Amino acid sequence: MNEEITLMDRIKKLYRPVGKITDYIPLSAAITFILVLVSSMVGLFITAWLLPPAQTRSPAMQMFAMYFNTIGAWVVALLLILILPGNHKMLKAAGPGMKGNTLKWILYGILIGFGANTFCVLMSILFKDISLSFSQFSIGWCLALFFAVMIQSGSEELLCRLYMFQKLRRRYKSPWVAVVVNSVFFGALHMGNQGANFFGIAQCVIFGFLASILVWKYKSFWGAVFAHTAWNFTQNILFGLPNSGVVPVYSFFRLDAASGGLFFDPGFGVEGSPGACLLLTAITIGLLVYAFRNNLEEQDIWKEDEDRILAEQAQEVQSETA
Image (cartoon, rainbow, N blue to C red):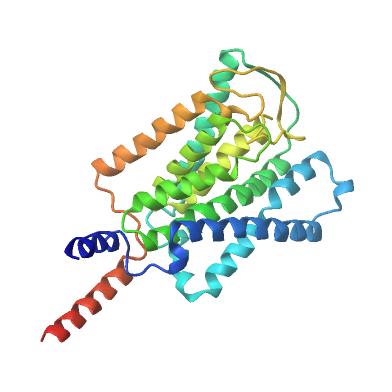
């Protein structure tokens, strides 16, 4: 009997008193996946309502519409967070009260995404795995498409690094549960993409780790959003390469020839390569080492609620034993 109680006590220590029943791993994953499906339908409706008919869209407008379709995730996820009182606090992670939600960290995020992807592209050119030529450029479409890519990349960060991450963070004491589970979930979402391969899915998981570290240790949800945005924009719109299997119909550079290599996969782009996995792993480890060496305070929006509940429980125990 004592051993059974001890085991139950150990299990209970894994959970936080502020957690909801829907925050357990299977339920949080299922709910987030349902949000992905619902938001895709909402996004298609909004895009069809706001943009010109599909048959009249130019190549640039086709790219804009493809990325803008994900606006549904912003609508659905934010409504769910705002409607359910228990989720309201999730918005703190994206608010100005967080130390990393600043212009500086937005620029750092852009630097991470642009720098990492450009490095992989340059290595691919150096190793003669790809050949590029200039196609076209428009400052107007550059800004518009960067915005559209931000909507798409931000939608995935909103669902995975804000909604799902905070649900798991609310339920489990170890922050690594939220980091690992949401990253694996993010990778699994890309398994059905055209050209998906082992390194492509692995890269998505690793990027999920990187983005989660930015949210958790650097308190920068927007840093994660813009790192994601810059990576996708650089690969797809700037260099005209496949982005998670999506081949662009409009880009500033054009892919003239391609073969598989250390930093490039013909079906999935640079992110389907072992070189991209190694590079993002190195960046993630570097961020973690810096965070722990400098004792950066972690983001934990549920700490005050947890402390309050534990204090109330302690008072109840004292009252019962008095």
